Image (tube, rainbow, N blue to C red; front, top):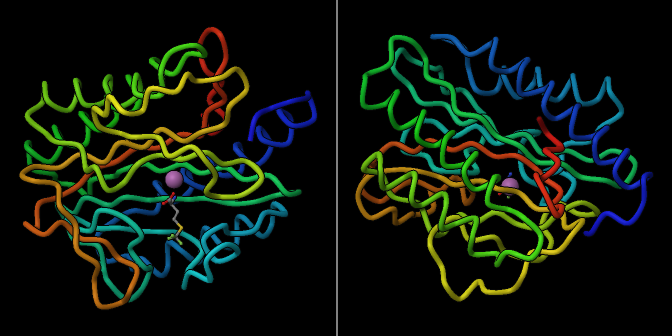
Length: 246
Ligand code: MF3
Ligand code: CO
């Protein structure tokens, strides 16, 4: 969607804050021995108490309120009996709807103690996301986002997973346009004032190719390399974007 009114912006910010607060709550609960199902339950309750609905369930009948992807699971990890272990890389991805508006955000948390290489992967993923956001200015090509994110990833010796782009959203979870997280000169259309999109580069090592797990949802790296990702929902403007899930 494109923001057309103060009401649009206020409603997006309302669901954006609930999503951001849910992630803060989950991050505090990440510890050895905790199951991903327990984290999902905490998120579900928080969303419910705040009048929000989990978007994956609402949109795709996904079997969970949140996506929790550990280590080589790149995205769409289904919460379950898995217990977190020291050194794990945990992607917490929360998307939700309230009053017909959607927001989507993700963070990566390491379960201490985290290996140095893993900490570097996580830090680079956050920097890549933030560089992508800074490049999202109305009038610039859509490809500016992936150019910026990939530059940061490469500096750290990492690659961007091409199969996991960002996306438009707002009145639904996934809308046009698809937002390449990697360098993609074909994404030449100009970003427009008010456009609502996610910026969500997923960083890893090796080829970045993915395979679907037998559960039909979880996407793993084929080479079993670990993945880190950060995501915000933003509104494009003529200057700095508005970070809805900040
Ligand atoms: N934030 C995730 C994404 O944009 C939400 C996925 S919903 C799922 O890909 F149902 F597809 F898992
Ligand atoms: Co998303």
